[in-house]
Image (cartoon, rainbow, N blue to C red; front, side, top):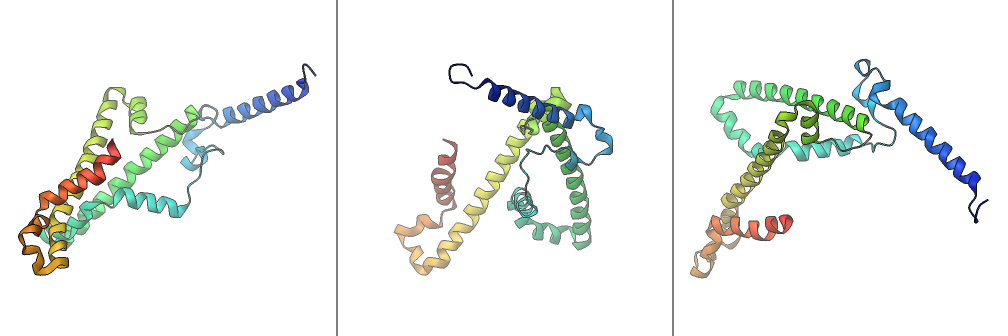
Length: 197
């Protein structure tokens, strides 16, 4: 004991820390045969685990967007057979790219012992010269999604107000409720703007 500090406890703590570090090193990709392992086997024990239900909800939230409202119209234009073929091809391509991205993210997280994988970090490791493009693509994707939602709001809110108010909406003081630009502006000011300030 030195100044009330138990040196034995310090040595035990150092020993445990060193043992933990050795355990983590044994789990890193450099010490494993990655080619013969499933991606799920590469996860650290300390990494948070998602449930099947939370994964389904997260994927639905990411995949199902405003564009799904246009699928019936697209199917009616190209025909049911062509629509089914296109959906099948897009599903296969999406599943393949998602599996590649997930596997790359797991390997990156294990090699860095962090959970910091993202589009940018994976691009920077795999194709450094094109890393900036991944950020640009994500930004354009978000812009497109936000724009599509605003278009839907502008197209539907006037109809909703006409249905709710009936003939009263034709009064001069309520005509602005039929203007799609009014609803788009209101949603941008009161819902979108506060989230980006």
